[in-house]
Image (cartoon, rainbow, N blue to C red):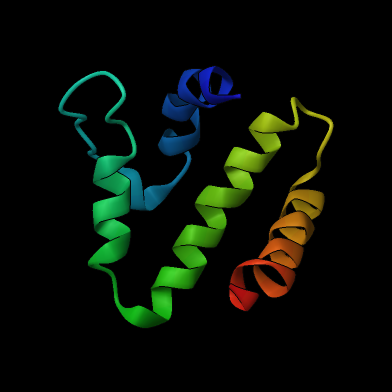
Length: 86
């Protein structure tokens, strides 16, 4: 799964406007730029940006078997029923 995500990241990140101009420091460092931008974003925008990135990753991991709405639904279930209860 990790290899699939790493191979798909350039395409995923190119579709996210907040990752525009991201220059990774090296291999395996594709996410640090976009994640830094999310961390420094206004609090009101952070959830939306994480949501967009996570949903795109889910569609890749699902190998085309998950639609955007299905990926979003899975993430919402995870955050509401698992993450928020930790």
